[in-house]
Image (cartoon, rainbow, N blue to C red; front, side, top):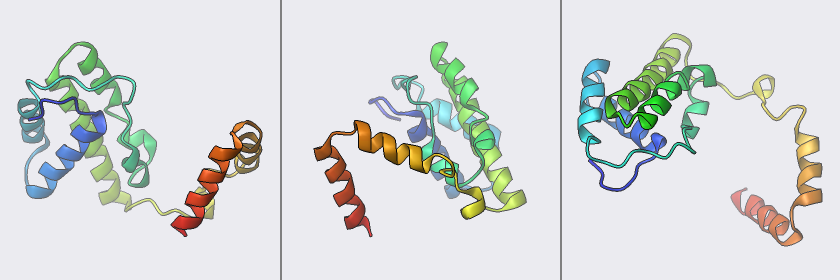
Length: 143
C-alpha cells in the first residue's frame, strides 16, 4: 500500500477503516488484507509502538495486547506477524467496547491524580520560560 514508512498507529488506523467499510469481515480476512497491502512497504519504526487514540476506547491492557506480536514482526521483518498484532489489538478493543461500552472519563478514572502537583512543579523548575509561556498561550487558545 504505502511506499513510505508507516507507524504502528497508521497501520492500526488502516485496519479500523477496513473494518468500518466491511463490518462483517472476519479478523482472519482483515489480517490477510493488511499483510498484502503492506507487503512491500518499509517496516514501521520500533521506537513508537503505541496507538495513542486507543487509550480513550479501552484499557491499555486490551489495546496493547498485540504490541508484542507487532514488535516481533518488525524484528523478524514479517508483515503477517505485524498484521496479527494489529488485528489482535483491534479485536480486544472492539470486544471491550461491545461488552462494557466505551471508557468514561470522570474524577474516579483521572490518571493525573497524585502527579498533577509534582508535574507542575517539575515543569516550572525545568522548562525554559519561553517554552512555558508558549504552552500557557496554547492552553488559553484551546479554551
